[in-house]
Amino acid sequence: MERLDNKLGTLTSLPMVLLLAVSFLAPLVVVAVFSIMPPKVFSIMNVPDFSAYADFFQQGYYKSLLWSVAMAFISTVILFLICWPLAFGMAKVFGKFTLVLTIAVAMTLIVSENIRLFGWVLTLMKGGLIDGYLRTWWGLRLEGVLYNGPIIVFGLIYVYFPFMLFPLAQGIAMIPEDARQAAEDLGASPFRILWEIDLPLASPGIVVGSLLSFVLAAGALAESKLLGGQAIIVFTDEVETAFTYGQNWPLGSALAMILILIIGILAFFSISKIDLDSMMGRRR
Image (cartoon, rainbow, N blue to C red):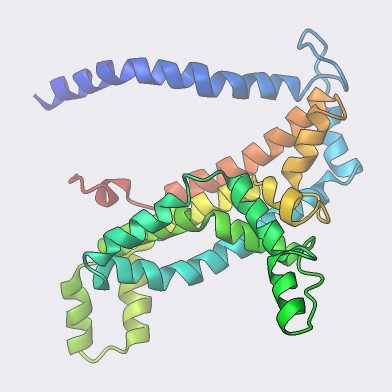
């Protein structure tokens, strides 16, 4: 019976697998093939050439990659520290009020990311909302807030907040309350309960939330353009420039493949460390 169920599952999933192969894998294959073409060609009917990958080091594109990875890592850590108490409250404390918070946070996803970031630009820019208020009522000026690294990190935290919060709340909800109460009855301190019970048992949610936040932040572009004013050139901006202004598709493809490879290795390593069956409530 179980073998029959497996066969039926394979057959029913086959159309979706084929659809994903065509819509997801095929474009990646095209990008990978273009990445080994000679510079500034627009056809894959050429002798393979790996000079685009050499340009990654020779022309300093690795610096933009380091900036992107560093800001993504910093924003992910800050997101975890901010979201953990709120996610814990949503999973264990707030009760029915959790639904209100969930809707409020989810509503932010309805509005375009660019529009929300433009709102912050209008709020923080010189002569903007906050600067106008400070000058009118306090005689102060707001300067130097936009167009730097910290404001880009702030934008990443603001935009990708839900992608850390919801997986964390799901992971914390998996923690048995009996285990926490037993540890407390045995005299464990709140820190020890956090370190030895909460964090290990919520690790699937932590890994998923961190992975989502990091991957999205590493591939972000609007934050550096709108809030950062391109004071820092992120890696995705280099990819876009190579494809558009540079008209160098092999270079853009090579840069994209490098980012895909890094993110893919990170995702594979992270997912291999979590138990997806237990997170989805399935029994082995």
